[in-house]
Image 1 (tube, rainbow, N blue to C red):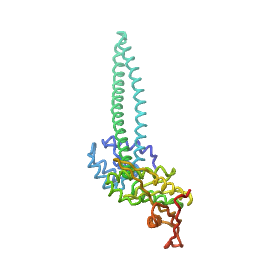
Image 2 (image 1 turned 30 degrees about the vertical axis):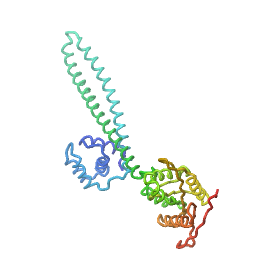
Image 3 (image 1 turned 180 degrees about the horizontal axis):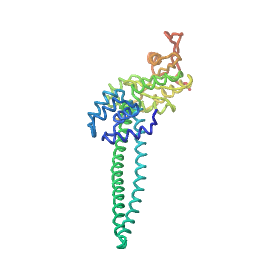
Image 4 (image 1 turned 45 degrees about the vertical axis):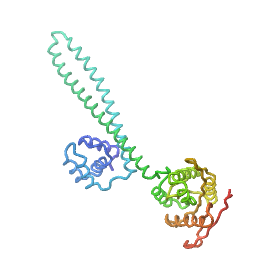
Length: 349
């Protein structure tokens, strides 16, 4: 496999040569062209000539590179591209400094040659031509290097902006707009990843009791304020490493890793008590709400769907037996077709 740093230099040089914009999908195209040594892609790219339009590049990308990189690999490629550009900039600035020093020395030589005696005039004229030619070449190199570095700086800024936009877009895509906690999509991804790597995962489902009354009595604006207050209250009660998401209208979910049954139950009870004591105020109104919680632990054979169903069954038991309480679900037999429940008193410590 070719050295990645070497390939990165080649990719940057090739993109600069054809005038391609510093976009991640363009980088992916030229990276495939060089790293995979694909003659078909090479011919397609070279057929465009210099300064192809982005539409022309996109057509080639869609035709030959359908496996566009995901967010993680895009950021990885951009980091590599930024590093390559930083390396090139440092090298060019070093060369520019050396050339400037060399040109100053040439200027001093030219000045000395001008003052040669008449007998040395012929020799001095020849030397002047040689020195002037060398100096002109050096100055041209400095000017070219400066233009290239300016372009690299512009590309670096564009790539940095692109990276920031990607990070921001990913955060928005995984965040609940109202409460600021993770959304259902992020919850599903996190749970699937966690249960795939670990067997000791605990899921807690939280539902605000009688939340419809809040909207009916105080309006949806106050209801939104209450949701934000409850989300913040749950977050404050959680321990480090706990994952909190809003999974529905007034429903939240907590994922815990490597936590024992007693500890997970204490944490759930701490959440319940924190919300029970919470004063929600807005527009001259003040209310209290309570929450019901259902807990289930993943077994070695659990799937995300089965774990969620078990926690949801425990939550339903909490709500159907009076609300404002914590219920733990335990499998009753091997195939978990039946279940038993453990209720925990509200004063559990």
